[in-house]
Image 1 (tube, rainbow, N blue to C red):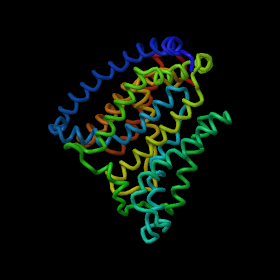
Image 2 (image 1 turned 135 degrees about the vertical axis):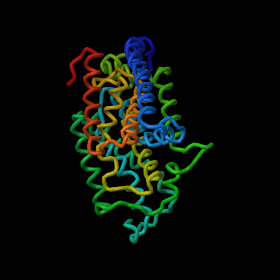
Image 3 (image 1 turned 120 degrees about the vertical axis):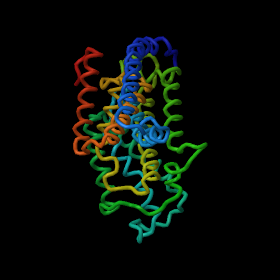
Image 4 (image 1 turned 90 degrees about the vertical axis):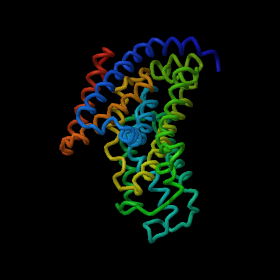
Length: 334
């Protein structure tokens, strides 16, 4: 690969500087939410409650991370929410006997987690092939994949929730490491590694160059297609991993697991400064977006707000995030 540091830096550094202003803008918002939460309920600021918020957001956080990476390279993936349910469900039906709604294939129990992650690889690889190789619309393809994968899950499970015990698949969602849930460690460590890699390594910054101007990035020697394939597959694997963690936390995989999560993923990413037009935004901002959403929902729950209004509030947050993105970027959104 030729020297790409100059064009990559030229494409990425000015955008990062603007995006970081929005990252910092979310920190006061988080402080305000903490104050509002303390006023709403005396247990809000307890360690146990805040750790519960982080644990509950850990699965959504992995989906947001995957979606943010895809958005930065100028693509989008709507199928992540269905992969969240499909991947663990597929692993379970391949392991479980027919009496527990499995297929009775007799796969060893320890293969459940690898199969779950491989399901994410498969969905991501198909998306990448159709979008990058056949040059089809990413929006339409991933929308079709969302429907297809959801349908396959319902077909395999006959529309039923899977609640049988598969310890190897549930481990990451219910284990405890050094006094904290393993899902919290995974969420924070994966995000930290991604923030450092994308923000401070040349190959990581190439994602911004691809999303900002793919032709220029290709001319600079960046293997744009290869990088995009890796990012799309990685996003699906993160969604599959989030699905396994969710199964471990809840003890079952419902037929609708992940339904509607893609809207929260977009909301958190855009709220954190990630552009829908590609090439802009930071993963730290997306992390702050995830925490903001979690705090808002936790405050509403502790304040005993009517849950029937939660969907409307989440929709208003998404609309607000899009308006904020329009005002701060100055660009019209397609």
